[in-house]
Image 1 (cartoon, helix red, strand yellow):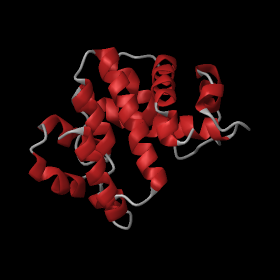
Image 2: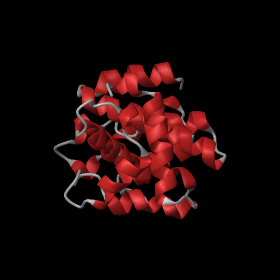
Image 3: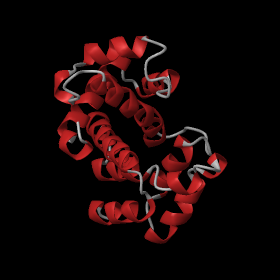
Image 4: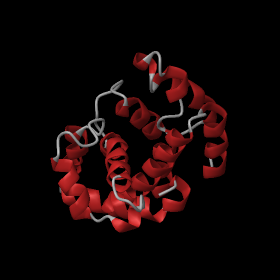
Amino acid sequence: MTRVEALELIRKYVKNKNLIKHMIATEAVMKALANRLGYDEEIWGLTGLLHDIDYDLTKDEPEKHGLVSIELLEEYNLPSEMLNAIKAHSGKKELETPIEKALYAADPVTGLIVAAALIRPEKKLEVIDTKFVMNRFKEKSFARGANREQIKSIENLGLKLEEFIGIALEAMTNVASDIGL
């Protein structure tokens, strides 16, 4: 599957524009992690892009999130590592492989970084830095939906939290125009 095909599929199933932006941000973070850790950027990027394709379909049945994605993607003959990562990020499979662990941590970090940018008057990623995001990370009441333990789980891949935040922020800044920040 190409990125263009993935975006067409996303537009078919995902109507929430902010969710699409989140998926694009997660794609960017996953590609950057693949590059940093020595894995296939295309596979990791597509995994990030497609990871919430079933969100609109399962929002009232969260126990099916991830599983419906697999059903939607079955016919595309995607690598099992992608499908397993999508299942694992939603808790439907134990985290075992690097791509699974990366997606699990990348998913909530995008929300933390977006929230950090949105509290600035400029509402732009380019005006925040890693230190700013790290300070927000330490504030328990800030962006409560961004699970801190899940983000910190990146350490299971040998990255320090601050390095991960820096990688994610840079990756998201590179796609800022696509995500409206």
